[in-house]
Amino acid sequence: MNRPSGADERGKDTNTPAGVCPVYRKCGGCDYQGVEYKEQLQRKDKEMHKLLGGIVDTVHPIIGMKDPMHYRCKVNAVFGLDKKGYPVSGNYEKNSHRIVSVDSCMIEDEKADAIIRDIRSMLRSFRIRTYDEDSGYGFLRHVQVRKGYATGEYMVTLVCTDPVFPSKNNFVKALRKNHPEISTVILNINDKSTSMVLGERNITLYGRGFIEDELCGCRFRISPGSFYQVNPPQTQILYDTAIRYARLTGQETVMDAYCGTGTIGIIASRHAGSVYGVELNRDAVRDAIWNARRNDIKNVRFVNKDAGDYMDELSQSREEVLPDVVILDPPRTGTTQKFIDAVSRMAPERIVYVSCGPDTLARDLKLFRKKGYKALEAQPVDLFPFTEHVESVVKLTRAGL
Ligand code: SAH
Image (cartoon, rainbow, N blue to C red):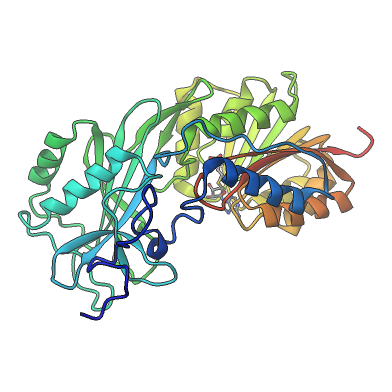
């Protein structure tokens, strides 16, 4: 057989040192396999100093985890067949669409992995065919498992090509027999030739169609398509820092831009006069509105728009929504010049920038500096051990304040 040396027939490394994931070379999910956790944190500190050193007055040491294993509360598995025709599930190989079979992963929630393994073993008896990307035939494409960290609720989303799922009730029953912790099962329809995991349509097969979690004393609903941080205990530290950096006294008008399911804004609302949240994803905004009600919070409004467009409109309208504090938490690509221009027209006293992309953060902080905003301190928080990703929160004030 033509097999690379050091790999078995499923692509697993047979000569990796103990404690190192057997598929890490192929999988590409972890950049820091085999690197001690302390050393990982040191490397991240060095990187953040290099990027932010000249832009932020004080860059604090990164806050790491006590136990950095199995922290991911959201697990995606792609399904397919191996060369012998048996179902496999796992991740795409780095820079390719070949599947690396993963049974258990050091950074993923262990129960989520067990649920995925059990689904895989049920496929044959339920005559469920996995999807083949090349031919476009087959039914099951991905399984996504999400866990409410504090509630222990699990949501299973079966991403399939067709809304008709034969024997779905028996399938759900069999799955829940082994995993009573599953509180909802959703069929997501994705019939497009796309690298996006989820399609747009969801059909609830069991339960409420979402799970809940608790963070910083608030309750949050998580739907299949909504963003929610994958490492809740570290997220709590991140959000607490963001609220502290906002220095709220109970009077302020706060803008929560790129608000997702409204988490930061809802937590901030207890310390603010009023909060506005803006978010592009429709499902997330629906969750945000529900979350505000669920937490009995009345001083928050959410808007479903592009954050840059919304801020631009506000800054030019007579509506007089002039935020005292702008909190922004954009995706890895960072924010836009339009957003920064609009914010500087509104001239809030403080800006709190939550970032998952250090490079774009450095770029945007320089743009804010040109508009007169000084970055006083940055607090990196390790939300993603074993990977190179760094989340951080930065406090900016209008120069002279
Ligand atoms: N603050 C939230 C979400 C942060 S993730 C939390 O902590 O959970 C970034 C969010 O920005 C995602 O919810 C994404 O849907 C949203 N987003 C991406 N592009 C956007 C845009 N142009 N305008 C508004 N929101 C956007």
